[in-house]
Image (cartoon, rainbow, N blue to C red; front, side):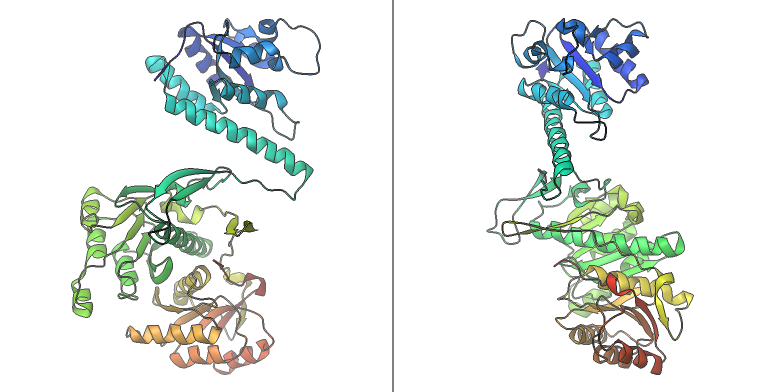
Length: 517
């Protein structure tokens, strides 16, 4: 703990003045023996409440009209940076004005000087409230809080300079990351060290991988975290599509292997049924895989995710052996059941209850010597903008269509993904390299699991260049699907669907579903 000295000064320089909070903060500091310095506007508010505060111009004894603010006076720098300063400024509460107003040199310089002098820089009202709580309780500021505030101040300065740079040139982009978790290793055991890095400028609102809380389990590896990130994308776009169509979302369960869906099911009434159907889409593939839901895991859910007598009959082992499970929350009995698996890792994030509200994020991919950057994968299936062939889907076909589309558009099984769904559950999914290979694999996997494809719905993330892939799906029993429009042979593909009376919704061609390259 850092013991704050007597006769300590706090400097308030605020572009945004929240009078109630400001008065509360100042009252606490004054009661604890602090002296308060302030910019003209801040001092005016506090003096109107009868508080004994000092205008920064009086502190520096500079009454002249200068082209720089009084906060840049050498006395301020001395009080902020010199350990033995007679009038030592220990805390700076600074909210700089935005770039739209101008380049705030003074405000950001104050923050930099505070860091240089190992003082306490505060850049927002929430953090100031945290400081005040510590002052109230024991008059001490912990080294951990001070370091965190200094980090935030430097990031604030960097972001300000990035904005200035952006106003001059759009050719330069700086990205700031912070290590927030150490990983056991990279994709392979010899790839050490590995970390989760948080994008300090991200506005994900708590929906990102970095917002997950590991409740129990081994330290995850790079592969675990990459797989969870892929699962989050699948959950988010499917939840958004249901919300877009129904104005509400069902219970959603996604079973994955290496972040690719090998099972997915929804239920409007039973989370347990959603889990069971997702597990049994491909009970061999999911073994040792990952699982994510948008609802609370109950004890019954935990039992379903742990083992199955039916699976023991099928594969000689009742355990699902799930490596990673992600949910909004779980009760204690459920955690106890899931933690019996020695290497299981369980993560929580309450925001998954509202998965449909997850914001879009820009996509960066590291390459040798730099990054690739693109806008987010944010197409949400909109039935009103599809070009319909023969007839639109009936109400009881909508859910399976959303599932098939969501899987094809968020997985990478080799490219040109084709997925098949029926009765609110995924049947199978296949990947390329060609679309005909993807269709063939999807059908094969479904039949291997003993699934009846008659009356099923397919989705493809790329247009059909020839009629071969559609013929495979039609012959397997698919009665409809969605696919991007396009290709030199589009008219032949359309004619085939019409001839076979297959319900097709053509997605606008610009919304091809390629991802994770």
